[in-house]
Amino acid sequence: MEPFPARFALVARKKTAALFQSADGVVRACDFLAAAARLAAALPAGGMVLNLCEDRLSFALGFAAAMIAGCESALSSDRSPGRVRDLTARLGAAAILGERPASAASCPTITLDPSSLLASTNPAGEWANPEFAGEMPAATVFTSGSTGEPVAHRKRWGALHARSHAAAMRFGLAAEAPVSLVATVPPQHMYGFETTVLLALHCPVTSWCGPTFFPHDIAAALAAMPAPRLLVTTPLQLRALLDAGLSLPPLALVISATAPLAADLAARAEACWQTRVAEIFGATEAGSIASRMTTAGEIWEAYPGLHLAADAEGVVSVAAPFAETVALADALELLAPTRFRLLGRRSDVIKLGGKRASLAALTRILTAIEGVEDGVFVAPGDLDAEPTARLLAFVVAPGREPAAILAALRREIDPIFLPRRVIQVPRLPRNEFGKLNATHLAALAGTSTSG
Image (cartoon, one colour):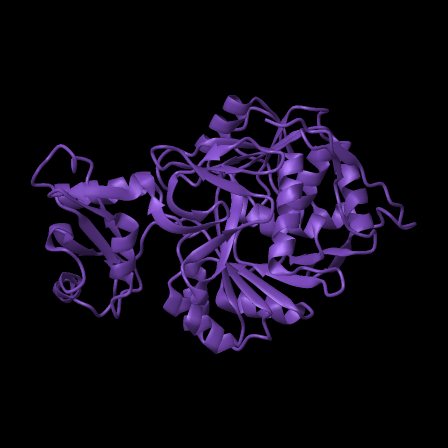
């Protein structure tokens, strides 16, 4: 690993730049830093801080305060007592940041009130913008658990800073025309952390901090922000917003991630909103890696400064500034050191009757069937050991009969991969990022086979 000689400012913006915005108004860089310094004084010096803030501005202030106090932030969207208890013990957390006290915590909770922190905190507009070494551990983030137990990954400050600037280059973010960013994803996930917090700190972006859960919230947030506007979302949330049929103000760009985006859904968004739709490909262990314009084709282009290489077994690793070289869990077909096709997760490939298929590819066929609002193919745990084992398919498809869905699948896929049953469910257990937890899917499959 290369040495880390560089230092990077906490906020790479002018002191009057608008970093965040909510219904209460704009938060400028100098006031944000002053409020973060005030919060930092309440944190233990050094150590780990568990950031459980739900509000985006609270989260950003907590992250910045931890940096100022010399602490590393652990980011978790799971606020259940068991998960909080496990994380504080496993990470040795010295404090928890949140809007309310955390139950079952073994360390103190410091409650945040952004309005109080920002009120009259910097009347003279003083500018204290600390710099940190690129090698400084800044955050520990966790995988979503979609393929098993969430795994922790440490992020260094230089890597986070460099990736923000790579994204700014890729998406044409320029100081001459600051972008208003509205996101439907929470900041604890690597995708939300990079796009909604780090971009605001490092690039000409103002990030919305109000509610964006329901389609009407998203429309109201976009209307409250000046043009040009950037919407950051997921395929599941994008479909829900389109289906709501709301009128939106002009969008300069829509960015989607966390799951493959169907080209027809991207084309629908582009036609409906007269905009462009891009996708980000990334992984928690490596951060954002590449992007593509979805309707332009299947080829992904790596971010500036990143390089991809495959070993003898075809496993692709990504090398990025200020970060360890990381082997990806996804299977890629490399066309050049910076260009590739995404084939799916390596663990996603199954073998039946001497033939191979991707569960993700089968799921895309399932969800493209008319009337299917959501769906997923699941492989039972005994697929490798039991010759007669077959796949299962769960669907959210009001008004469609399972037999009709199975008939549609029969026209599209090899008979060996047809599900034993198509099982109707009212909803799939997706988390706030639109991902399906492996444990919940296993429970669904177990219930269906035992029932």
